[in-house]
Image (spheres, rainbow, N blue to C red):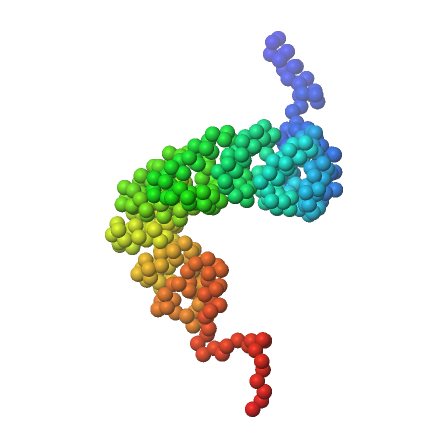
Length: 375
């Protein structure tokens, strides 16, 4: 009897349409999109499909202020195309109230030279500008702190754009990091009169220095001191590494130095000289160093040439090969002529390359020089 009842119940369940489970994709289980937001973004020529693909959740939020935020950006001088790009990359900007955007604009303009500059920053770093209103007090305190160090306003703006997390956290954390940097600079023999310029350059080249624990810097310097670097050499390294010294750790540096020394076959003193010329030997991992050494040697460059110009290791094998081909086309032999023409940044190379002439090549026609008549 019990089995029959159970069977009857099962049959009724199977026949009942109200009990059928209909599995749908998770996206369709969410509430419908905010049509007002979608329409506003469409009118602003924002790539809606890109927004749906990357940050579709924004389109489901309400309230949203797409028109208002776009209007404020245009008031700052942003073109329609720029506004569209900003909102496509960072659509959560439309969730900020007009009051919040005005407040953020006022904050940034306390260090930004002009509204035009601010628009350029927002286009490149929208997430740095459209931060939570809950961080506003910390941002103000941090701006006041860095300006109190007599840092250039442009540097402070660059810090805010490149490492916004450092301005969203309590000012005490940044004070601790900066204090450690200043003390280290002085302990290594740096002059107090030059400390502001040194600190400004360090922070502008690598804003993420502020996000690292101060102890890391001391540990790394202790390791390098243990490898025989003098106080003056450590100060040079600290400046040359552009803050990277605080992103390293003793284990990774030890492995990189060991690999480089084995590959070159040099003494500890010679290795220190090479590191001072090319700090990349400290922070490139073994795999990168192996690739760089292999690429150079494979291109016919000798180890003695590499040690004479160690900064050549900063170039990828692809760049080295491309430059060698260009130089050979001009009749320049890298093996006998040295690596100076091959080395350096793109601008350095173009400058050196432009001075070279093909063997037997006649000077290029100078349109300014007077023409000589026929004899």
